Length: 333
Image (cartoon, rainbow, N blue to C red; front, side, top):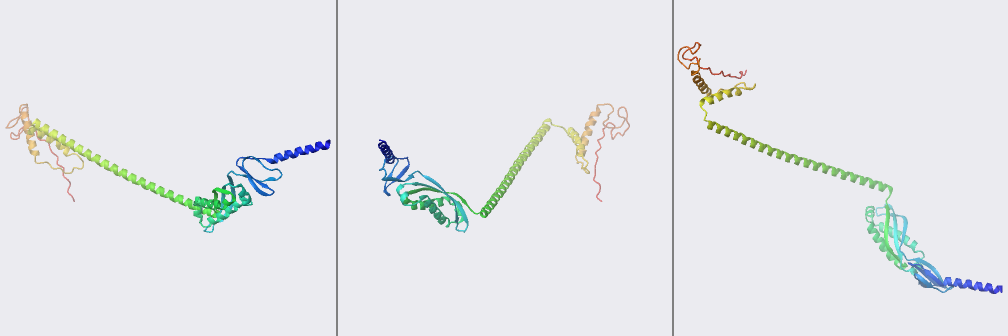
């Protein structure tokens, strides 16, 4: 009885194990390689799959999603014999699980070595400056070679990126000095251009200011001349409208003489010939005025009014003309 129970238990366990091996669940974006007696039979896709237990076996499960693999820095020699370290990143995807399993032993290692050799071949035909400025060109060339070589492995290389290109330390120092010199040169050029532009604008401003100032002074002089001309015309018209006689003109003429003699620098001034006529007219005017006043006599002999001796020919009542000072310059020795 106990032996029968043990046998039944063993059979149940075997059936359970057989069911587990028969039913295979493959996740999404994955694939499994099935071998029967060590030979490829089929590829299991995502979902529920049935296999023959103890006959079929799962050789490999492969992720069909896009993979990102960074590779360590690789020393590469440029055309001008400089060693640079280049970091690369590969984006690939398995498109054929059977080929990725049976065509190459380790496709990751194969892609890495192929990337290194291809990168050395591409960089070897470029100098350092072109290498630093041609990343897109290097990426495109590297991707084309890798995609063509890995196609038979069931792998598609989607993208290749260069993470970093590190030249030697001495080259980095030289490049930094060169860039600093270029920046200083550009700064000096910009400073000189700014000073030049500032001087040009200042000169233009001074020129415009001088032009405007000259125009203003010209207009002011014209307005002053016009005002003086108008004043002269007004005075001239007023004089002619008032119809002054010779006596008034003579009196005004005498009033202007002190103003002519003003100033310490006036060493010599000339008395016009018309001064005699002016004095005569003024003397006659005061003589006529004195005829109707006591103490004045316009001519003849005798005593005038309340007194005063004098010659009749000169006239006691006439007012003498004011003395005119003559200033002469000292002779030059």
